[in-house]
Image (tube, rainbow, N blue to C red; front, top):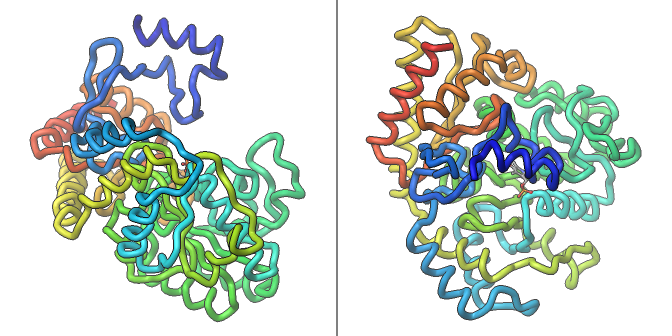
Length: 418
Ligand SMILES: *Cc1c(COP(=O)(O)O)cnc(C)c1O
């Protein structure tokens, strides 16, 4: 059956025909049949070079043989136990060794659960209620963080069904602004439990921190006993072995992980200073639990994946990112276009704006209609990127130079045809 027909049926059984809103685009999304390496194949017999990579997890590419093999072996032993396993210790040890601020780990099932628990933990630790997040940052789909605008005012929810009372303690400020942080802290430092930040914003395209911004946050939070939470669900094991905290040499108090950590299977994790982590149940009084926490399949896939990540891996991967970004820059230059190519390491995004992009409002100045044409043109050329201007493209180990060159040619054609 073809994607178009499947989508008609899907709409009867799944709201909007999809299980997560970003997957929906017009006229209908392609339905996946299988994937391998840098490619995803649809039921209509098309294949695409994939830069969505399941929204970030597949740093080794699709169906990496080592990951698949280790999962098959684990499947023979069991898929869920509800009791501890040795592999959880092994993965926790790897996380602690790789991530600078990690001293203990709690495995959960998604990034959403990780940020929810991190915020609860920070509130318990400080005895304060308010949290600060940045405009346009995404920390999962739970109530505390579904707030975008309001420039430091009381948070108003982004979604129906979230009571104002729930987000009243969520303060939202523009990313990369020191003044916004300073003025909030000046007024209410004694009420702020945590600042939660994507060290590189990956959910409004790709926006890096301004030089010194993360260090500045580290200093002010330390000074006022505010917990600094890095949400590294995307950047963890993506921009460096130790994540953005290694890349920028700034150590937060708590870190949330997910995506790559599960090697293509569902996972999340909360990690950080022992002093905080020891407050989690059953040791401390901060409740955290989950039927599938530390699921052996996800843990196994994560373990196999993390073992393959080292300094030389990132050198190679980052080189591919540089190659793509400079290739896209050349296309823009050749066509006298002022659009902005953003990103670092193996992350990139093309913004259809002539403004420099340093925060959410800048990103919002992009021409999303133009992006939409670019996306559909690329699809016709056999390249799949996330269908939104406000997502980020990823490169995997399996993307070879030949695929990158094919992609750059497709981008050239796609941009010309807009
Ligand atoms: C994807 C993402 C989340 C949510 O993770 P899920 O596993 O989808 O719940 C949280 N924070 C960031 C930065 C993310 O990119």
